[in-house]
Length: 142
Image 1 (tube, rainbow, N blue to C red):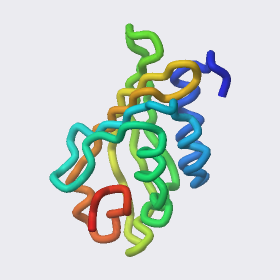
Image 2 (cartoon, rainbow, N blue to C red):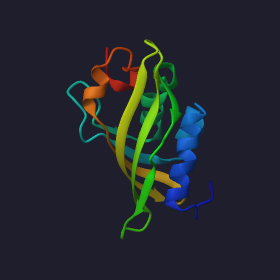
Image 3 (tube, rainbow, N blue to C red):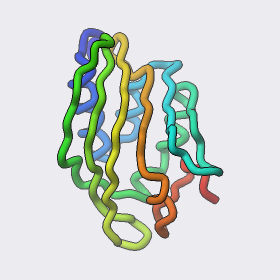
């Protein structure tokens, strides 16, 4: 994406890539030293990923475990901090291992510089990873 891509546009593009199960494309939206954080990560799950390679390793098997179908209720809020947005949304789909429904509410605080994600704080519900089949290699679950 061009370096002057607005954060909201980059974020929407990233969601489309996730729906298309294009994890390499999504990872390509990251700055080399970008940081992804999970403030509500339960014990045994990563709370911080440092660098594009760590994000790629974490997300590698995601589509094998969660089959995302849509991100309804997306609301993107601009902030007073240049390049930073707050996104509210739901991710819906199915859990691949069980065929059961997947429905997660997210709030993300995302910062973009030069057309790349540099910071992504993902506030998701840690209780959801207790459901059978939701774990994936990057989640730290064994």
